[in-house]
Length: 219
Image (cartoon, rainbow, N blue to C red; front, side, top):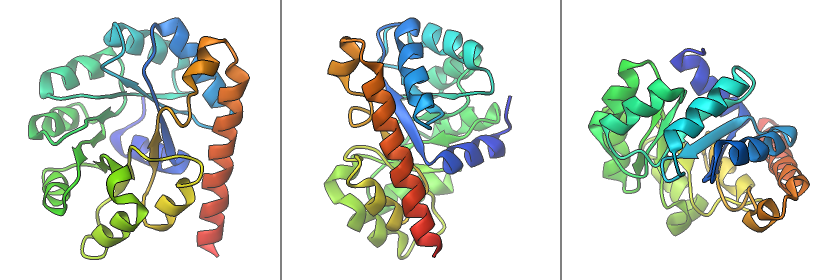
């Protein structure tokens, strides 16, 4: 079980969390295997997934230290606690909730609350957020990230919504420390048809985009 700081490093080093809304733990594992094969080993299971807690428990038990399993769409401290006890190693929310942040830290887990305005983003950071999920990132785009980080360079920002192969380099260059992607990474039609090779190939393209952009930024 990684520590909070180790988990933060894992997410930032991978550079991306795959957001999955699965129908079952078996279905999620098939998707997770395909994504992992493509080079993405951080999975966010949303609480909108049917029997989400059971799915988290089964998948975290299967993958152990090979894949980092977290929980998304968390709205409050109670849900946060249940997901962590089920095996979630990090917690993501669509909006800002102080109780969720405090509960995650009580269990030594990183937390990424959702925020959008500069005031919300700073408030999340002041309350102890390990990273701030900017949602919906598609509204402001990469230029919004650059504007926010001008006066607030210390805050770790992660975009959700509007992240695809084309915008990945732009968000990273604008200062994002990692990215969250759902439908752009996991093709629902391909999954429904059992073509998990499509998911693997998409994950590989994201992996290449992240690695190449970081290499370019490093000079």
